[in-house]
Length: 222
Length: 260
Image 1 (tube, rainbow over the protein chains, first blue to last red):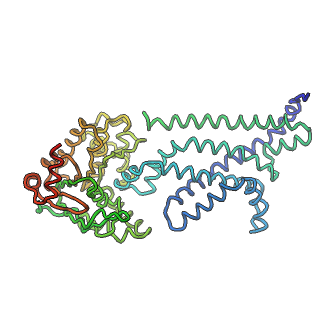
Image 2: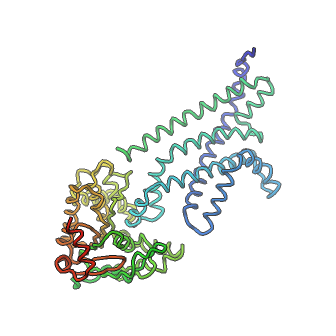
Image 3: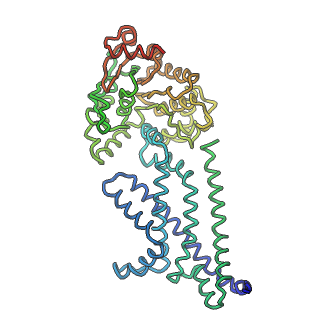
């Protein structure tokens, strides 16, 4: 029978956790960019500017419907060959995750904005508010409350997908795990601990979203 | 009637939704301080007429002028850039043409006070303190001073509609449009909203009111328009319209609504 040897992992825990910092960095930077990309994509898609709507749809469909790993490989290995654009592994990872999650968030934002009753926009318009003011002061505050759960899920997905960076040798959590596996021949123990670390990172995120949702909902229901 | 200078003019407005011809050349001139009540069967184009006046709908023909200045015309609805230009032109009016909606359309994430303050702060760039004073005054005017901190969800329909009126008033509009503002209310709440509207009419606000409240029309209107199938069939003083309507379609409509 297989005997678990977690002591191997525990001894090498500092090495493993060296990757933690990069995992968090990749996630935080990518989430920020993805939120901006998503919002811009949603607004452009709703803009009714001739041509632009279709362009955004192409972007969203391409990034939503192909595997992230393939996108990462494309951006890291193929872009230098095809266009001569060369980026570090870290930048490639952030770019890939931002563009990928941006596509998903674009659709979440669009749905959220469209879910707000047209009467809200009409009331703001008749009061003389500009489109930008209406969006910032009336539509987004209401839409954001509704979009919090899917946005939270997306952030959790992104944190986990940052593990794909190990594929192009970014020394984040999963990559450190791989190295350790090769050295210790204890993949099950190591991967279990790696998974546990991801859980410890994502679970508070999920609680945070729940808390924000409760807080943000106050105006609408009380 | 007719002596006051014209403040709002609709010139031969045409509106189509696809193959549906909703407005067929509607022309109206409203004098300053006048209360014009528009009546007519549902689907006659009354609401669309109001929405065209305040720029919520593009026109297929004709124009809308406020104080002689063109604000909406047919050409601007045709292209994206035209619609944008029209939006900007309308924005320059800055709430001078106010509208009250059937479904209130209050901002649910803001308190009653926040709803009324929003446009003065954002559009007129008023300081928060001045806007709050202005907003409290408007809320007092509609009898809701003590509800300033309540969110819309906590207010009755009648109260919500009065907040909506206060919100429009805070922009010191020259013209107020009322689009069936009591139709979504429970019958016992209609009175409090009509009372505010009567008070506004008495103070000399220029109002265009689409309504099914015939008693209100009879009491308050300076002029009544009867609309049917996208045209103004007949217009006149309330007395004349309700006692001796000239047109067969007007008679038939009044008979139907007054029977109830």
